[in-house]
Image (cartoon, rainbow, N blue to C red):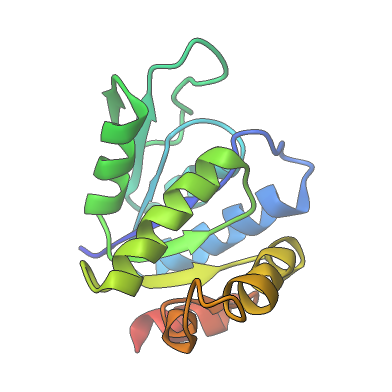
Amino acid sequence: MEYITIFGSARFDEHSPYYKAAFNLASKLSKAGYGIVTGGSGGIMEAANKGAFLSGGVSVGINVILPFEQKTNPYCTTSKLISNLPDRKKELISMSDIFIIMPGGFGTLDELFEVLTEAQTGVRKHKIIFCCSDFWNPLIDFFKNTLLPNGAINDHSFTTFTVLDDFDEILEYIHN
């Protein structure tokens, strides 16, 4: 089975459009035969695990011990508890070569920049998909308008990821 890791914030609740998008996307991916991997906590992670779980698919949660906010959501068919963030990130990344980046904060950005750096440097070949362009467009603009003109990245850097909101297009991109 091929796994897709979905990164996103623990802080969006079930009323958030991002939570709903993560649920629906994970459901679609699960029905297409992919296993879903998340950080196993709440918010986007819960939504993705729930979408996979309720679709009868594999739903993996790789959680971490933190002094606040982290508990494993009940929608994981398999879960693992890691004692620190660097090892958790390593585990989340090692399980997949396909990454969907949903809206999130510093933790999501940390995970995102790890996979972008691996892809840019050729350490590993990844498919990286930013989902929810309304959220991510300011960051992509920063890449284009600040990093690129200052030589911090080059044009090739933009081949390491794509931005897609349509779930059918995401599935097609993954298949190619």
